[in-house]
Structure formats: C-alpha cells, structure tokens
Image (tube, rainbow, N blue to C red; front, top):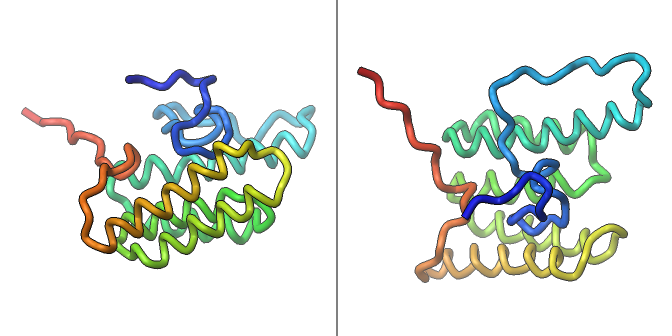
Length: 156
C-alpha cells in the first residue's frame, strides 16, 4: 500500500512522510533558498534534504555514503532526532544489529523526552529496537521497507 505525501511516515517519527523518509525525485532541489526565506526555513529545508537523502542512499545500497550523511546530520544538527534514527538505520543496513538497537533506543528516549512526538512515534522507535534485537537472536523478522533495495533497472 502506498503512503501519501501528507500521511504520517511509516518509520514512526511522527513527521509527515514527505518530510521524513520519502525518497526525493531526481529533480535538483532549489538551493540555495531564495534570499527572502527566513534562515530557520533554510535550516529546516537542509535538514529535511539531508535526512531524506539517507533513505535514498540506503535503498540504493550506498551504505558508506548514507553513513557519511548521518555523520553530517550529527555534526550540523546534534539537537535533532534525525541523526539518531538515521544512524540506527545505517547500522542495521551494515549488519551491526546490536549498535543499531542501541540507537533505536536512544531515538525512543529522545522522542519520549522532547516535545512534538506522539506516544505512537515513541512506541515505533522501541518496536524497531525490539525487531532488531529479535533479528540479532536469529528470529525471523519482516524487514522494514527502507532495508529493501530499489529494483535495478534492466538495460537492453
């Protein structure tokens, strides 16, 4: 089932899909922003673009680039949850399940102690940690959509 741009993101962040995990299309972003934009808007736009880029990189199997984007998120936006949950995703994609679960738990704690997160979002972060821990124990789990690679185009 497709997720609409304005629906809650299935990752559980509490954000709209378009501002969270939606992989941007190939059109170049408008950057730098027009000068009349408020700087906070520009920062939010850059944060959203960088956060969303991790999803696209993971879907294309570009784990090293996704990891670099997470480091950039941490350096530029250390007070936002984005670097925590995206790092959890990258660690999971790398197969470092123990550390991934720790980052999912850090994201859950962040969401539980900061404004703007609903209880369902907090629960989603905790459920991701539990899913990763189950996988670590060798249990069969359903992979989240962002760990499923994009199909490769066939060339004739």
